[in-house]
Length: 554
Ligand code: GLU
Image (cartoon, rainbow, N blue to C red; front, side, top):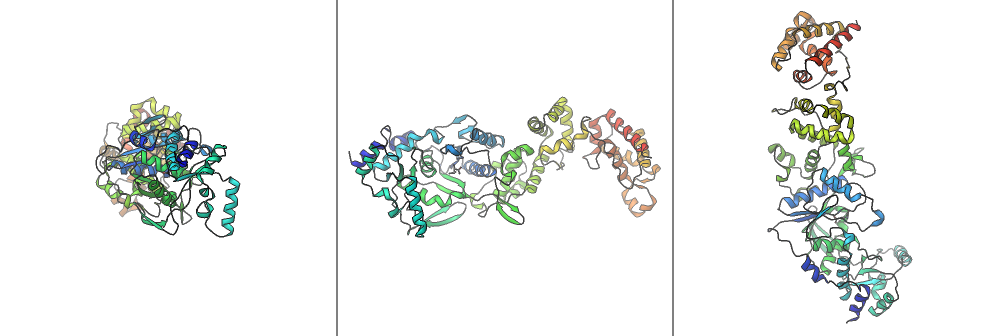
């Protein structure tokens, strides 16, 4: 046994599998030519962020477009930053917003696939097998430098105005003979394991980022840590081992990792792995006092996916909106393919913004109004109900009391060629449809300025006498017109405009008075349909109550 082999054996006495074994356990995937394998690899450090969801969507679409696989791996190696239930929250968010995961963690507590464990804290033996092999080949070594020694070295580097880090002459433990290292291991000294870097800072490396284009950086010469003193891998090392063994073809991740690519490429090379293709997603930006800045977890409530759930944005709206900021040609495609599944859109990584897509809540609202306008009444009912059960249970109970009535409410101005686009999120619905429910209706009887209470009362009295619940929209409007002239209101807008002084008002004012009496609002969807939905009793009662109120104002 060579002395390096002895060292490796002393460091990992219990590891009996070799990298070759793992190559057999996790063979290359049998997918069609060109299929892309992508992943999202969050740490369970809190709730699901918009940025993580956005990056997940990009990964999902990249896999779907090639009949590939998108998997979820949990990077739970930093126990200090871990939050209880953090992983479940992330997964629930992904599920709730309709992001299908093929493999790994697919839902809270549900794991599937042949390339697991999909949780880094359960992969220690795998990482150790690879490090053991590196140590055997003198490509990694134990480093016994204490935290204090490292601190002193860093301070010296700063004073000397040289790059900080563990490289070249500063890589003290690289100079230990294997015999010395072996002895210190046998004495039980604590250590981390470092890569024996073959790189040179003077050399430049080049790689093609699928979003940012060709990038050139100095080669890595740092003896980076592979395993911490507790045997837990660093992100860098785990990324190389996991993405190799899980057969990831495309690593699409946040661009905070771009500066680490030289380390990663070196690791893949040293380990004998084929490197994946990289695509680094720029952060989502917001406008703040005329300046662009990164969406902030701390400052911006809309950075958390919870925000969209609470506000009641349909999952489809959030996805559609994110697609508009992911690829600028998505909107044109959507206009031409209103009903198509978004996964049929030819998503292109190369068309993503290099400087960072700008997040705009108004635009999300617009997109969402379109999405909601295209839904049928039953779908709206189901979604509003699900939202209300979570956030406004009283309102949910009201909706459920007479489900058919509620669906009827949502059918108004829907399902025709030009559906009304006025709801952006479910939290607007309780107020928006309040007048359909006596429990919520507030008779806010504020008249247009040019209509006196005496005239309003007269209009409503006249209307009560001609009100016919069977009338369709056209007949309804003819009836409203018919009561105008005797009351001094012009039944025809064009005619009114030629001689406004000859009248008290016009047919629009008359219908507004009726609208206010019945709904307490000046603007509503189709009033005739609203009245049919409310039913004769309610309509008559509200007209009568308004008459009394206006008469009291005389
Ligand atoms: N755990 C890393 C993070 O949350 C994953 C980065 C990656 O996708 O490789 O940032």
